[in-house]
Amino acid sequence: MSKERIALAYSGGLDTSVIIPWLKENFECEVIAVAVDVGQGEELAPLNEKALKTGASKLYIEDAKEEFIKDFAYPTLRAGAKYENKYLLGTATARPCIAKRLVEIAKMEGCTAIAHGATGKGNDQVRFELTIKALAPQVKIIAPWRMWNLKSRSDEILYAKQKHIQLQFSAEESYSMDRNLWHLSHEGLDLEDPWNEPQKNLYLINTAPECAPETPEYIEIGFEKGTPVSINRNLLSPVELVAKCNEIGAKHGIGIDDLVENRLVGIKCRGVYENPGGTILYDALANLEMLTLDRDTMHYKHQMAIRYAELVYDGKWYTPLRESMDAMVDVMQQNTTGISRLKLYKGKAYPAGVKSAFSLYNPDLATFEKDEIYNQKDAEGFINLFGLPLKVRALMEQTLK
Image 1: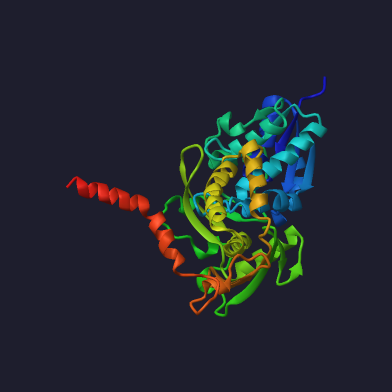
Image 2: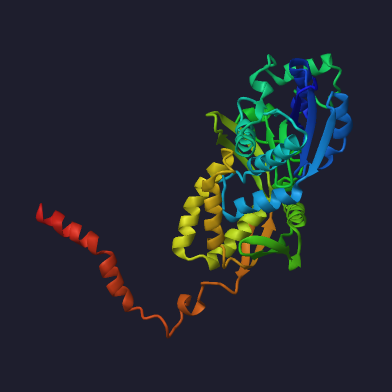
């Protein structure tokens, strides 16, 4: 009888390196490792040799960078979604993309189970498993952190040594990090005390703002229907555009966010995020929307962005509500086409100009000079009607005194 096949979401880090031998030991199975490239960079280079050495029978390295940006990061950007008004959802958008490709490989390889290395304290376990349930409801899910007797990173390192697994780091010196094309996150070590300021050597993408150039740099982002398409009038693919924004933004220390966020499982967690490209794009789009969205639409979009961010953060990507919100965003962004210019300086992206053929800004109406199209006398009747409920209430209260 052939062994059970288990597909493992594999990163080559401590957790998944230990999980391969643990799965084989406890399930007598064949492990198919799946690494999904969403922009981890050099982290992927040694994975093939490492996965096979630790016991995987096969490793897939799937390039999903274009899909990740186009189908996950950009929709979240177009919705204006930021979790707790800060976090640009770099990990939260990557997880459903990774899990989708993981499910596809698991089905192709005839796997009966899917395993992941997310801990029982975090959000990723929910994000992975909700995607699996949505796309492969019959597949069994194995979450070793909720099953084994390893209680810490130190326990994992000891287990790895027992299994002769080579590690390139120590628990005392390495932050818990997640990297993709959209961001880099840092957790753990000295960051576990919210009083501790992040050290300059923490940043692996960004220049610390105080060390950024003394001369500002201007950048122009072109949008079509709310989707970024160009930098400084040069058309770029989604991956090229985000990579270029990351490069330019990082030089000026743009997009460093330090927050204590509320995890879905009820734990507050401190994280420091490097998100230079995403911050530029969010700021540039908001700048353009000031011209192209009417008041009611803009205000409702701001409200919807909060709920959209919660859905993404909570792993509810493959839900009718998120898809419905995307359909609404498509309508909202029909006229969000134009160019947004920002000035980048010492960790901040300042609005420096915006234009659109669909602009609702009319200088003839907005001017403080003489105009021929706005009758200021009309305001009197408007205010009388707008304030009528207040006047009626005040008159009633006077009669009671």
